Image (tube, rainbow, N blue to C red):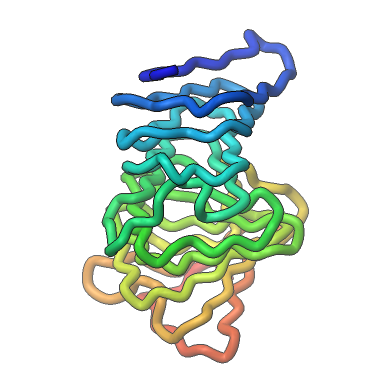
Length: 231
């Protein structure tokens, strides 16, 4: 099938969907709207228009998608993946905006996950929320840019930042309650290189937040911030 838009709504009921079967090709605008609950894609996707995910529900990509290319835009709710290749072809060179997060969250569906260094992440005005699950890491190897804030959700895993080219202009908030957060645990952000948080002219603050205060794990690295609040 060639699909330009898909819409999923439970009309108030608690239910999940699983889409399986043959390869489906997404064509522009390639909208996947999920109003509530979870949608599992267990079939492969193709096309060069990427995915534009909208709605407050959760999209879970669970298989490799070697025939898919284009930007992955998450404009509400959550996107969960099990491996980087669930997002489609790895860009041969750095691609800014390969993933766009705007008032939306992005996390690992249980296993430790390392995002390809060429998949640039852009934060929209509403900011982007990252999280790891089940004691495992969400490792952001690619640069994070854009006008929004970077939020680390309270969750049962942790987020790792390791790219020194991060230059988003919003705050860095550790301990957020964005889409997919888990109450009762502290958010943890770990550094895997020196100087990976955005700072300097035009950048925001480091904010330690959450019911249980967020944790910045320097992991033996050094870091400069414009200011720290909330600790």
